[in-house]
Length: 74
Image (cartoon, rainbow, N blue to C red; front, side, top):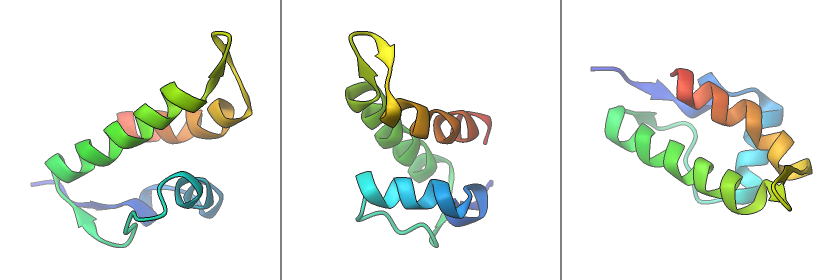
């Protein structure tokens, strides 16, 4: 079973962005596949809802893009 901590996957800058949009997330807790998938879904939702302006990637989207990519690879 794969276990990962968000704070080991993301940089300090990326964690700061996560706290901005998901302040209730415990990034030190080890996540298994299902909770990690739930976290990834939350980040994807924010990326889709806030990351685009008129179908163009905006500042928020650019900030979240690398995080979304890292989560997809994990």
